[in-house]
Amino acid sequence: MTKHRIYSMSFASVYPHYIAKAEKKGRTKAEVDEIIRWLTGYTQEGLDAQLEKKTGFEDFFADAPRLNPARSLITGVICGVRVEDIEEPTMQEIRYLDKLIDELAKGKTMERILRN
Image (cartoon, rainbow, N blue to C red; front, side, top):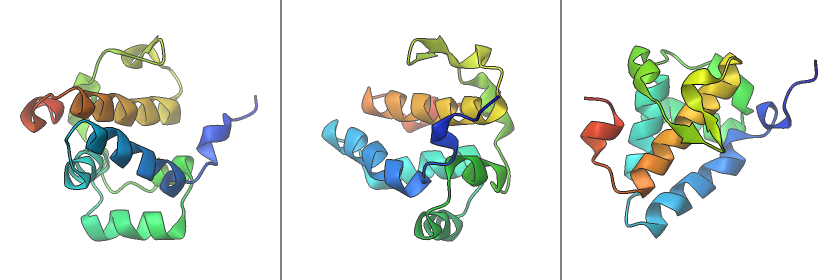
């Protein structure tokens, strides 16, 4: 089976779109970074390093210091698919992040987004 092309796509190439989506709705880059750090366990310095290296999505999640165990609480539909039903682990991680950014853009509080 061939891998989905997003796996090799640079995380840094999509990151500005996450920020733009959030800022368009009055949210901030800092909130986007907080979500990414919460999900992956990267420090801000680690996140910045991954962006600078232009790491692909597959390696970005594979190299994540500590994927948050609470990410299993992320549910809902993204791109017409329920995130909790995605069987391929890397794709599920990508869609978890997409869902969190969507929640940010929809005005949810950070406490709710980060499943506190």
